Image 1: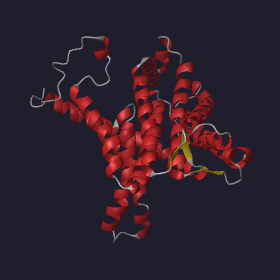
Image 2 (image 1 turned 90 degrees about the vertical axis):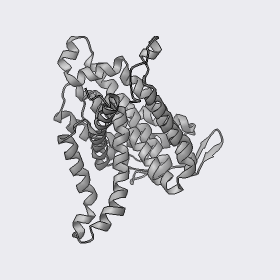
Image 3 (image 1 turned 120 degrees about the vertical axis):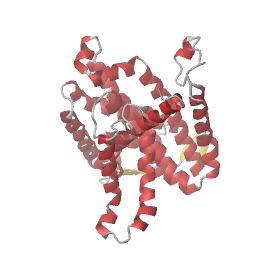
Image 4 (image 1 turned 120 degrees about the horizontal axis):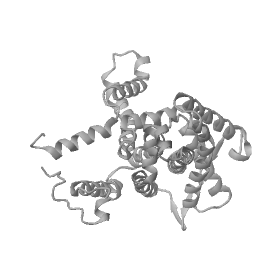
Length: 352
């Protein structure tokens, strides 16, 4: 009844190109921003801020980058965690060894990750599908080996660099609330940038390549340029996410934190959340972050009579089952379910 497009007059180009043309969408976004910037920091405990919200925001950013590559451009990648590792190590080296300011170090880590992603994205010009996935898998193993064995990069054979204290313009970032605001501000900035990116010419080119690359090339879309840009943008987001989660959550760059399992974890996020949607990245990251807490605190108590080996692997069992469920029942993920709910709101009480 209240979710209507009727009466929303698009009298200017700015109104016609608005991200949220319906007032209720803008109000909902405003409420979410107030919750994120005002309510949560002052009501949530330090545990929730540091152990739940920080990884949720960082993984949302990484999933958003992977969604640009896989969901919008149609290029499969199972080495996304490796680009997060490149961003993490690069930012720590820039900040700790060379004294580069923290904001520049964080985005500098994204730039180094973007360069690495562009290099490993070159095979996408000749191969696609399963073969491209294997190519990105090679990137995962190569980057892991380099960060572990090249001492001038990681400083030792164990591939670990401790994160120093964070300062921005002389202001130390040492509490969960301050770290929360740092991650949230970067996430908000890159989300707005990414949303406008996929709504423009570049986003339409990616979609055309995803749907049918041969037809896209015939109508003038450069596969070479747009595929490499997709890898570069996706890896940049992964690098920034890796930098943020290392500085604020892990407190050290360790290659074991950016293993192959994390790459599949991120892929599961966009499958469950919804590929080809910005909102789906947040749905998937939130689902995959909060589900382990629900499993550990609720299901394991209920499943006391279940064999211990099954209980120990219940999280992986539930994750795998949900991915299969969404692939079969709702391939577009939770974002499509939310879109269906909005359509029902728009049509109610006249379902036609």
